[in-house]
Length: 271
Image (cartoon, rainbow, N blue to C red; front, top):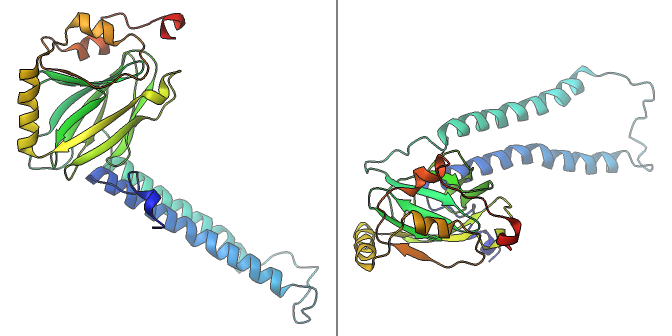
């Protein structure tokens, strides 16, 4: 019961990236506690030992230097910096967002466009797209390419791992994987205006058969994501629901990433 609040977050990972990040967080916390706990204990011990009523405590007003104490004082923070720096160095290379995840299965390609204030997900190989939700096969790496139509945003699925920024005119990359079927909430971790609190989405991990069935269902359902539809999507919308498109004639991600379409709107239109 005491750890109930740790569910559905970074402390309850469901993928290799999230699991590795939890290990780093645990190691860093243990290293820092190795300093914090002794400091607290010795503070209480010194206060008790050097109390006014303790006649055995020696008063040394002329004390200036002790080599062993100096060694301890400087060695401990040096070791802390060394250990934390080593963890950060190794973790930053092992968990580099563009680095592909090791897997026997080919990665699923998903393109992400942060709108005001929604998320657009495009499957370039399947020629489908969704808004505010995405479906992926469990146990399969997902390679994200991300950009933004306007202000900076931060794409984050806490249970799966790393967050990464989306920026207009730029493309970033991220690799994640959901180990088991389930529903994982995603958010924008970067304030982006009055509709920021509405920028939530859901990642649904399905079995391979379930994912293939969902793709086929979207194709049958219809709906076309063309340039005219995209121009409507980029208009600021607060509290937008989920949308699906069974056909994507031309990849709109490249239009947005290379600035080939107008995406800026006035504050009056945004409100």
